[in-house]
Image (tube, rainbow, N blue to C red; front, side):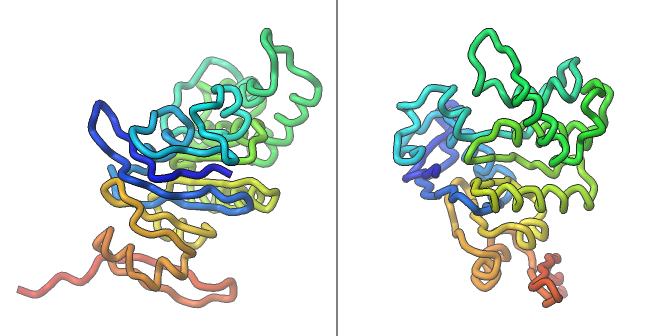
Length: 258
């Protein structure tokens, strides 16, 4: 399990995160939500050691992150970043990159690595893209390939920064279903999401960030009952009960009459 304890971090001496306590729990889908600039992506990068803590610490199964090598970290946490370059290789070769932490150098792919890649592509609904060049894929197709690469890394924790970008609504829901499949297999899955309805309807737990502070964390029901989203986002939130449980929605509050 990855734990952030009183974590502070920022860029060029500009503080972003301010004393964040948060755990990424196995078997759970956690959604990080908050306004732009609230520290969501910074939190993921700090949890991975891509950005150093200026205060507090990050623990991997009780071991300080500072005591782990990059390869050890890569065997513990896969990261789907928000922005990525598009190399001139096939989708199948791209997903094979997820196996790098498990291979010695020079890298020689084993039959089991190729089978893991095949399964990851299928799980990400991208099996038909295996031989397609990455630079010929649409944004949504590329996103599915990067999801497959994170799955192929076979880590106990999977961190995704806005994984539903470029995806239509059906594939956005598919990402959430995949996240729950990974969680049911025992992984901790953490997603940065901007779609509050998707986050409230699809996550087991939400962490609400504002101005680098963890304002509140809890189940969707606890977050709704607290009214924290209405305060943080200046929206009005509602819900309706369906056969599958509560479904949440957001709307702008009515304008005050002059």
